[in-house]
Image (cartoon, rainbow over all chains, first blue to last red; front, side, top):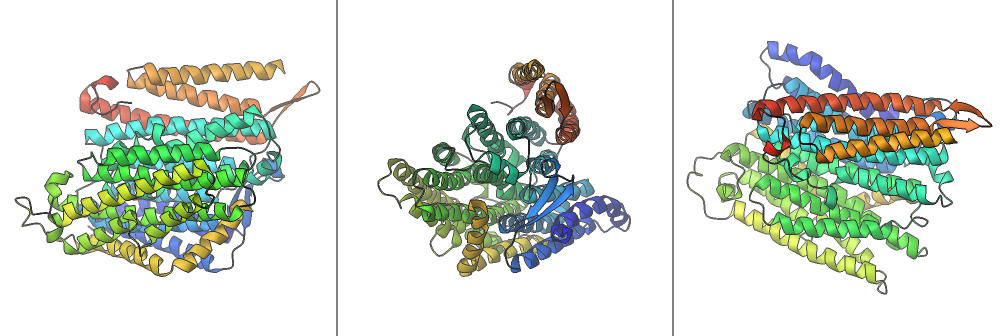
Length: 504
Length: 106
């Protein structure tokens, strides 16, 4: 059954081949070659995933090595990993098409390394969702992490990128090591690392050591997910990276942290036994409130979008926390937990599309205006109508304006929070959630009107529309936003099947 | 069981020393050394967890051994990347002192 993991092997294989073929492309003067090659690899990986998603849902496990059950490293494929892999691969495809023209416009060198790292970054994220034990998960996790450190500091001639890369590396490695320590404690407690075996042996309480490893895992994966006490690398790292990488980092890399947290919490520790729901609600509420207050003070468009990513992580974590809270305190209300988790998982998709789109559009503005300052970008939208329409769709989706899908995911989380009116914790969290959503909608629309409609600053008149090759991914992502809004039902049904795997 | 506790104590000391070095040192190379100590501490914990002592005879779990080996390789990759960034920081600022950096504050 190894064939179902073809997309992973396509990406890893293409990463190796890119380095070999790039010198050949350069010799014939075809500088776009390796970018086109990487885009084709992403396209085929996405195609394979799509074909797999159309088949009836099932869980496939495949052992990489080892024979008996505790001594194995294995991969799995279930609807949840398929769903997330498709999001990761889709954003990777958009970023890779965008990079073809962008990297040449920015006169970057070392394109072979760039596409190698982009491919391994997406492959690492896919591997995290496909892992069936903590050992495999950690290996793919580090593949993703090391690629993203290198990509953040890719522009090593700028002080900003080098510093941000170092800060990111330091904080994120400490986080990964803390998660690894938690995993080691779990291994010491149970003698196994497979998710199924761990779930079986942790189904009765294990006392202090299990709680400690739970805390270490939330903290460790939380650094990559940028939950609030550990978020400070994100607003430096995301703006310093090349724009397509910012889109990938903000759109999907932080979601990998959320997935790792979600999977290890719901699959390994059962929410009804360990009371982490309240903690997660607290973290989520703190994260979104802090980020939403700080975001308004930003004057750099990429920093603005980076902070709003932290706020969106807060929404997702709150949704997950509400589900865990309901499962612990109201075991009969499983439907409410399902609703909250559906909202959280759906918001992962909406935020990935919306934020990816917003970052790529911001990149178009930055390339043309050669500035990241909001006051210098004012009114640039009038000269670049196609980019601005895509930017508008992305921001409206993020703001949660009704017919678009971003509205529905937030609505699901809110209605789950209001489902049990007698519970004070859930009501308070939901009230703060609603306030934050309104504030967020306000500043997204403010950003849009400032960039699109405000009176032109001087010297904006000679700005041209972005090149065609950079517009293609914008159109794809904007179309995906609208398509998901139209096909709301099938997508939600897919998420619900995926959730049945998590909740059992 | 005294062997286990000794190893645990050693790995705990390594982790604490590593975290202390990262938090308090000003020199980037020392910070990277602190990160390495932290990695060593975590690796030692995994290796200790794989040590099984049943009726006086000890055995080791192959999974823990292979995990430590791979984790060491990953740690080496991170250290290499961190040091290459340190070189680039030196090229920009002519110093290894983190206080001189513009934005590296926590």
